[in-house]
Length: 149
Image (cartoon, rainbow, N blue to C red; front, side, top):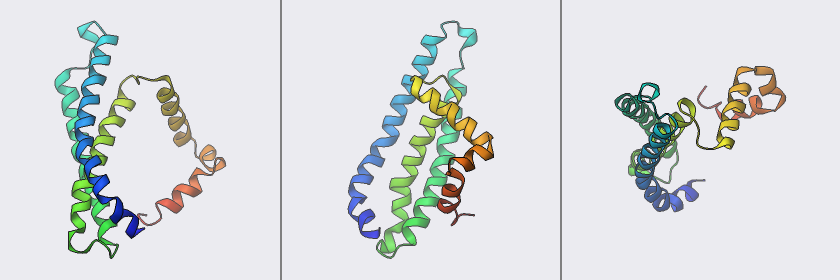
């Protein structure tokens, strides 16, 4: 695992460097879709509020990605003294870009019908614990996040 992450670090770093730029591009595009679908100015989400929501969520996600990246990289012996850079340069920007994408998906109208169905599926799954257990996702989530619990 350590050698795989160490080998992929240059690729992940370059992708993480571009991920905020791509996220900003898609955020502008999503807001343009939102404005086109709601031509009446009274029904639109205000641009300043949209920017503030995205900015706050991206900063919180960056901090969480930073903590997760630093803890995972510094717990492996292959990174040495520069293990903190992995969280700052890779997982932080990825988490920030993912937050921008998910905020647009959750609070605004999705641009794809498939994403809408996935959103509704996730809402149903996490609202009913029995269905989560029947699909085997509860056990999978418990094993995945056991370290953090």
